[in-house]
Amino acid sequence: MKNVILIGAMLMSFTFAQASNVSEKEKNDKHKQSAQQSITSVINEAMKYPDDRGAELEGVAHCMIVLNDDGGLELMMINSENQELGAFIKEKLDTIHLDAGTFIPGQVFRFRFDFKYLG
Image 1 (cartoon, rainbow, N blue to C red):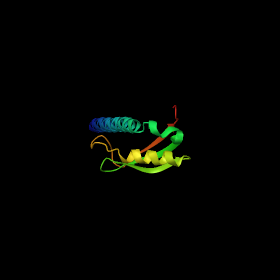
Image 2 (image 1 turned 180 degrees about the horizontal axis):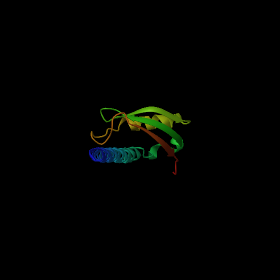
Image 3 (image 1 turned 120 degrees about the vertical axis):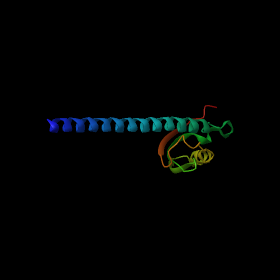
Image 4 (image 1 turned 45 degrees about the vertical axis):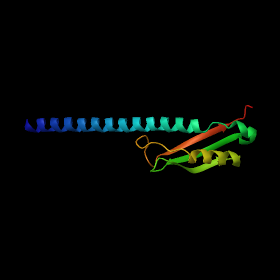
């Protein structure tokens, strides 16, 4: 009888441990999702097409960006046929700094930028 009670208590503690781990994972996932939405909106705001550049920035660019410890964004990779577009994106990313607590240093993001002059 004592063995049955002990096994039951062990199973209950294992179940509670798994439930607490799941909630921690859910918290982390929600934090990552919130940070990603925040970072995406900041980057989208910074990447407004400049009116004075005409059609020279048209094209598509694929980027990989990592968050630095100080809240800055580091461009790890950019793939674009338009070199001026790549330089414009790098210039804009260098001006972005995020507040501490809204990001996880070392987190990597991939972005695709589509620029089309509608002039």
